[in-house]
Image 1: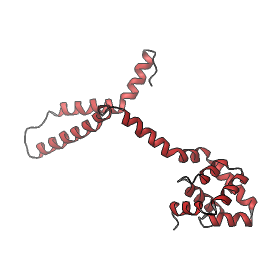
Image 2: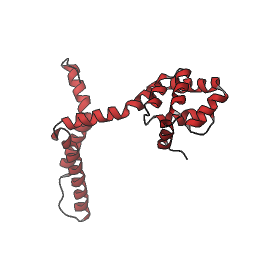
Image 3: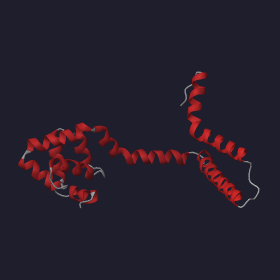
Image 4: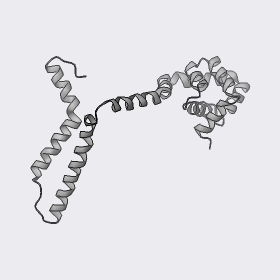
Length: 176
């Protein structure tokens, strides 16, 4: 089975140019840019087009199919791009988006995010300790207190944005 990495290696060779020109001729500029730039998405593009053409998932097979029937190949290429241009654009930019998210998280102080895992692990530990104490018939944490703590955390963790939105609407401020 051909992997996307193998397909990228094929795109870097002599077939990269003909494949790009086929995509441009077909009127698929997004796909042409992705293949020309040897984006990691290029392998997925080749696989998708080859699957719809019914040929092996290689750049050579697409070029050969185009030589045998350019109208059919170009129609398939146009259809692949037109069916989901947002998908291809998103995949092309996914690494940049992910890097932006990581940079944003790195810019925040550690306590802006650390409270969530701290409370998750602490509550999990308290629940396990309580269960063990019940099984061993030892004194336990008050269950009402433990349920209250769990409820407060769940409300803050899962409902914080909802509350922010509600209060923002009440006082006329944006919830963002």
